Image (cartoon, rainbow, N blue to C red; front, side, top):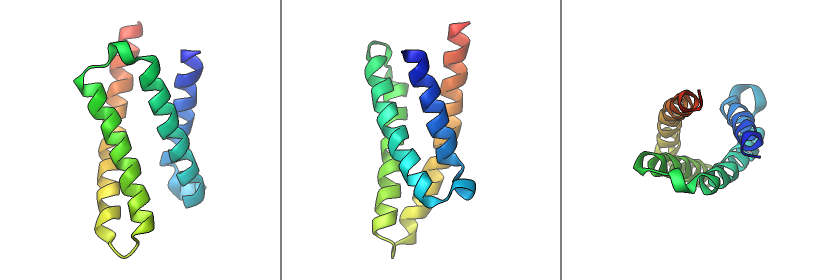
Length: 106
């Protein structure tokens, strides 16, 4: 079940970062699915959560919130700039998380 969850997380993450190809509406739907799957992933691995993993989940929630507020408060472009910066940092941190987790499996 956890392997299926990890695959679903990967697919929703890939669809989320493919905004130029899929469009904004698909990006919004995929980001909601990614957020929900991340929370489920955190709950299923809750005994192994350290400070860095809590910060990663917090960064996911902050990225989602800035995207939501950037959509609602369209007259403040600083929110979308902040969303883009956080999202780019999140991609790198998630790649590190996957690399470390994959090494532990081997």
